[in-house]
Image (cartoon, rainbow, N blue to C red):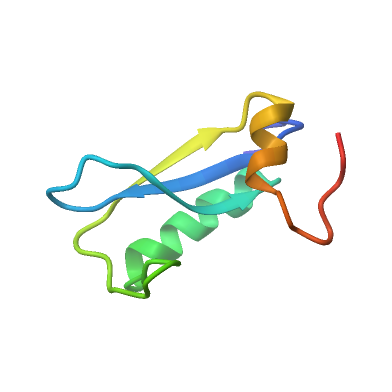
Length: 83
């Protein structure tokens, strides 16, 4: 299944007993986002900032809806396409 979104997708997680969503991955491809979530469900993941093992994360997939959000998420990425 291919869904076209010119700004891409973000994969977020919410840890058990925490109410904050954190962005784990940003991608331009819906299929890659789904593949990554399936991989995260099979293999334990670590937090990108402090490297702690995630405790029973719940994974979410969101569309990036605006160019402002897109530019914020991809800030500092050397190979990002400018929209």
